[in-house]
Structure formats: C-alpha cells, structure tokens
Image (tube, rainbow, N blue to C red; front, side):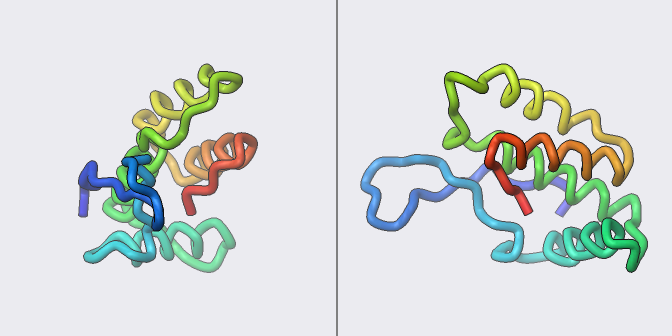
Length: 109
C-alpha cells in the first residue's frame, strides 16, 4: 500500500461522523509489516526499506489528516504536523515527527 485510502470510521455508539482513522494493525496488505519494520528500526533491531518508509509516511499522513484531530489551542501545531509529514525523508525524521504528535496527545502508532 503506497497510499492510504482516505476512509475513516465513527466510534462505536456514535451516530454522528467523527472521522477517526483506522489503526495500522487493522489494515490489510503490507502496511502492518511496514510499521513493524519501522518499529524494529527505531529500536535498533532491524532495517527499513524505502518502500516500507513510504508506506509508513503515507499512513502517518492519513492518520494526522483525520478530521477528529481538532484543537483550537493547538491548531498551529496540527497544521505543522499535517504539512510536515509530507516532507519526511528519513526514519529519524519520522521519529521526531511522532514525538511532536505525542506532545499533543496523538499516538499514530
């Protein structure tokens, strides 16, 4: 999966669309293996191919683009995350980007 589809889900029990992103572990295809390869790289236990890097970056773009991530107090930070994910060029940049997400309470992985 080189591009993540822009499909989102509503939380259980909700009758209004909230546009929550699907979790990578629930995806079909190569995405789970790509994220696991990134996590192995991040812990020093593996390598990350260019194709896997591209899949992880596409998933992070999909995840941070979900409409559920709204915060008037942190809109500048969210806008920065949404634009900067497209420019990530190395696994270490993904790690730094993920830390910025965690600072806002968003955990894509």
